[in-house]
Amino acid sequence: MSILIVGVNHKTAPVSIREKVSFSPDSLPQALHAAHQVASECLILSTCNRTELYAACQPQQSVETLVEWLADWHKIPVAQLQPYLQIHQQDAAVRHALRVACGLDSLVLGEPQILGQLKTALQAASHNSTTGSQLNRLMQHAFSTAKKVRTQTSIGANPVSVAFAAVSLAKQIFSKLEKQTALLIGAGETIELVGKHLAANHIGNILVANRSVDKAQKLAAEYGGKGIGLPELAEHLPLADIVISSTAAPVPILGKGAVERALKIRKHRPMFMVDIAVPRDIEQEVAELDDVYLYTVDDLQSVIEENLQSRRAAAAQAEGMVVEEVDKFMAWLQAQDHMATIRDYRARTDSIRQEVFDKATTLLHNGKSPEEALQFLAHTLANKLSHDATQAMHQAARSGDHELLQHARTLFNLSTPDDNG
Image (cartoon, rainbow, N blue to C red; front, side, top):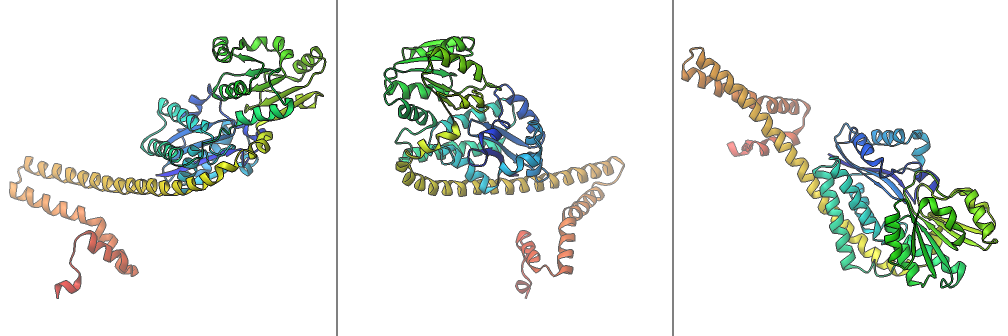
């Protein structure tokens, strides 16, 4: 069984590509079942910064098959997707999984949100029965490694995240936030984190818009704000100095026209907008408007860079820990392959035993003596059990494969020619 990971992330592909291969929560169950047709085990991790298919495959299930499936599912030509793909196999795949869980492969070094997203991806795959012993063990190993890294290094000591970067950028635009109104679109983990950072910076007012008004109101209440439904966006947009959006909507929910109308009502007071979503929540054309500062997740990189220095030494230490944990997992994986060989050998010998026993029993029923039946059983069983090994040793002798012959002596506990004098 091979461990394979195929996908794109913020390092290999721009947001214009990542949004084309993302999976919405609603489409995930169907996608998992479809992917399960080309991989023995699979789970799908889809976030604003990455879409990755994790798979455990039999020898006949190739990387090319996974790539073709990913492209076909999203109706993208393989040739168009290929330049942006990142492919990992075996120990490289294990290392990648562990680095992702630890936040070492994230846009924001050491950010903790990805671990929760990976756990959610595993839960979805488990719920849809697309994982098994290999991926389950890999994920649990990744989670325990991430915990070890967090407790034994200072990689998570400082608050550095996409949400933190978005709020930092807002502070650069407005200097102080006490008199500003922020409109947060969505009610997920990222938006919740944005709200916390805004509150810590004494934002003047917070509005939260979400498809579920109850969720919006619940989150807004934590910051003394107001929750609204998505249909009320246009009405409240003119109030917003800061707009930060992160939903799972498949199409943009804020268009150029709506923002233009809001700017007129605001008498062209500037609006700072951050679109963290993939696919994008805010139409690209909004960036063409005067008095609008629109940023995507890719634009946050320079802001994030300023907050990484304290994490780099810790990351180097964490990389060393990951290497150790990869070795541990690969040892387990190789042991499973050996166990599979033992199980297959035992199953084959048991099948031969049952076949010969049935024939010997038939001889007894047909009037043969017990001695004749036992003689047949012993002779036939010995021949059948030794046949394949004997053939392999004959071939090794003809081809001069002395190493195989020596291994055969060890395997079958045979004395060496010297031992016989």
